[in-house]
Amino acid sequence: MNALYRIGAGTLFAMLLTLGLAGCGESEEVKQSLDPVAFHDSDECHVCGMILADFPGPKGQVVEKNGVRKFCSTAEMLGWWLQPENRLLDVKLYVHDMGRNVWEHPDDSHLIDATSAYYVVGTSLKVAMGAPLATFANEQTAQRFAEEHGGRVLRFDDIDQTLLQKAASIQHGGMPGQMPSAEHDAQAGH
Image 1 (spheres, helix red, strand yellow):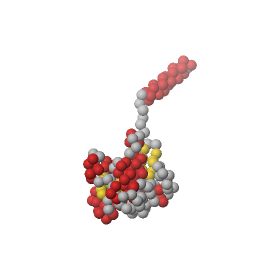
Image 2: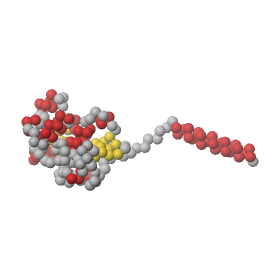
Image 3: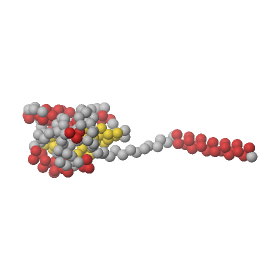
Image 4: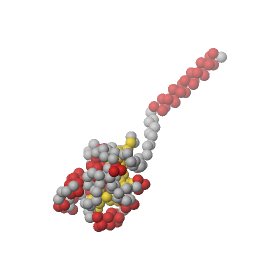
């Protein structure tokens, strides 16, 4: 019986060791959702620390495996994203679809992928920080908004730091002639 016990215990140990070693070569990747999350009244902007709920206009968020960064405006989020070290991160960018929202209080159930959004830049509408960039899922809605409020429609890849800085300068009392034009875009390779 003692020999039988040793054989059984040895076999059990060998099986457990085999199973343990078999799992070492395989890394089980846990897929975490990169879906947008709701904004809360106490959320602060990742860049400036301001309370998001205190300001009108579309907000932005960056969702990654380890959490969410929230921004008080789309310009703040894009300014953060355009930093070279941030472009290397595995993240999803989201903004409010203002075609389905009220400017004063955007609804979090209408967040869209920022990389496929249409952006209206050059309006005089108020936002927390930076240039007011109204964001839309639909190009026609963005065009109508630009006609009503001024500005022009751009795509995600058209936005760079120079455009953000000049648009913010206009918003905060700069000269309207400083707004990047189609000529600037052509020179910049857009």
